[in-house]
Amino acid sequence: MGTTKKVCVVIPVHKPEMTYYEKVSLNACCRHLKNHDCFLVYPQQMDIAQYLRIHPGVIAKPVPAAWLSSVDCYNRMKVGIDFYRLFSNYRFMLTYELDAYIFSPDLENHRAFEFDFIGAPIFEGFIAAGHDARFLGCLNSGFSMRNIQSCMYVMNNIHIIKRQWKLFKFFKSNFSVTRKILLLLKWKKLPVFEHDHWVAYMKEQYFHEDIFWSELIPVLFPFFRIADFRSACSFSFEVNARSLYELTGRQLPLGCHAWAKFMDFWDDHIHRVHSNRD
Image (cartoon, rainbow, N blue to C red; front, side, top):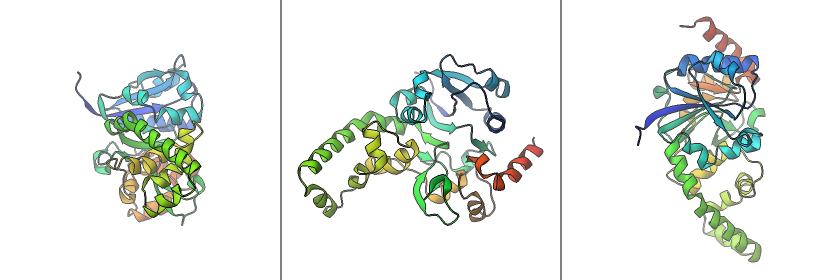
């Protein structure tokens, strides 16, 4: 058995050509994370020459093309045990989608390894959230760190929860009083079993894997720790970056997600980083 390493960086891609912003993103990844094992996860047979030119040290990790054939399939891949087995000799996985950007190699001091899942805070309204939108308690996965062994434990035991949901569904359908009793008992799994993302997961319909991991799994598996709001802000911003920047004392996080959609805030910061390269 090989020695377990602390962290790997997973860069999922699905097309051979990159946009300008994706090149900027990969360049930042190479600059700050080149001392870690970075894996390019891509469909088998896809040409990856353009990625290798920007990040020569990236490790090619081809996967079945079906895994990355759509956003739905990508979400399914991220809740599949086979995906995590590819990286089972690491403790943590940093997911670095190419609409992310990293500002520093200092993972340790941005609380990256303190939780089973950490990413940018998600607000009501999601990508269109207003500046005063309510924090939903879940975290984005486009730039996120997760504990691989914890994720594998969940996936190896999720069949138990699936059986419970099927029983719940049967009794709810056949006995109208079932839900009322569970409400009176304050059964913690009830909101999860009725959550649209859980139902979609069970019915093999479209769902978001970051909501699955950061909102549903901590209820179903109480050991699974997601980052609190303050810690998440230290790690990453997505929407409401300007407000979060002020909240954190005008400190940039470790990284950010979907930055190209919020250039009114990020343009100055990312331009400054590029203008002051080591």
